[in-house]
Amino acid sequence: MPNPTNPFWPFDPGNFPDLTKFGGEAMRAGSALDLGAFVEAQRRNVEALAQANQLATEGLQALAHRQGEMLRQSLEQAGQVMRALMAAGSPEEKAAQQAEIARESFERAIANARELSQIATRAQTEAGDVIARRLAAGMTEIKSTIESAKKP
Image 1 (cartoon, helix red, strand yellow):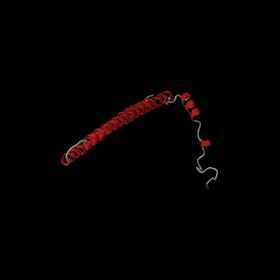
Image 2 (cartoon, rainbow, N blue to C red):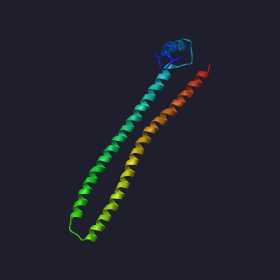
Image 3 (cartoon, rainbow, N blue to C red):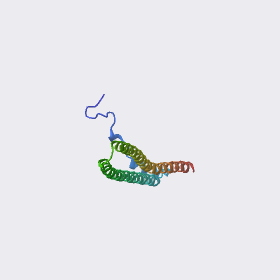
Image 4 (cartoon, rainbow, N blue to C red):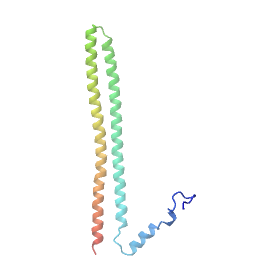
């Protein structure tokens, strides 16, 4: 029957075993459980996450910086285009000039999108590589711990 004061009934956090006592008992009993190695592995996991976050942050900063540069360049080029279009010339020359400006703008937009995509991909890859290396090392650590626990 549901408990109106505890929506997670029958879960009761007060019934959890005291894990600190368990660790102490396991160590006194001569168990193969190496809490120091476990803590050290967790420290390395946190370091790997911190490094991955740092790389991701640096990648986002590089992406934002490059987008700002691209915006500045676009505004400068827009000013140059407007001055060129305002200059004297025949309607045929203006039409040809506008077509060339449109082509250049399209090519520049594609190149910029490609560059931003490469920056983002590089940042994601670097951060992912840190996590993948730590995961592989963690699996090796687990395997070593299991193998050493099997030995008498």
